[in-house]
Image (tube, rainbow, N blue to C red; front, side, top):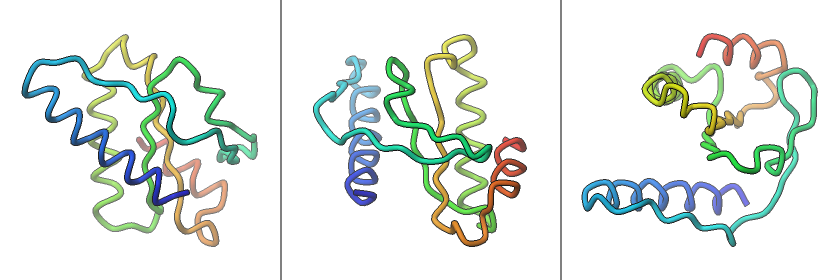
Length: 114
C-alpha cells in the first residue's frame, strides 16, 4: 500500500510539472487508493476521509532524518505560506517510517517546528 501511495505521489508530481509547463489544469484522479486510518501525535485516530474536500499532501520520513526530511518539510512549509488563504484547502500529513523512535511527543515537537 505504501509503495502504491508513493508511486501515485510521484506521478502526481510529474503530472503537476507537465501541467504547469503547459498551463493546463491539474488532473484530479478520484478513483485510486482508498481510505485509511492512522493515529496523530495527540493519539487521535484520523482517516483520509476526514480531509475530504482538501488536497492531501502525504510525505514519509522520520524525525532523526538529518537532511532530506527537514528539507521536504521546509519546502512544504514555504508552499503553504505561498498559498496564503488557499492553504486552508490543503492538508499536509507526515507519516513516520520509524515508529519505534518517533513517539507521539517527538512527532508533536517535530511537526510544531514546521
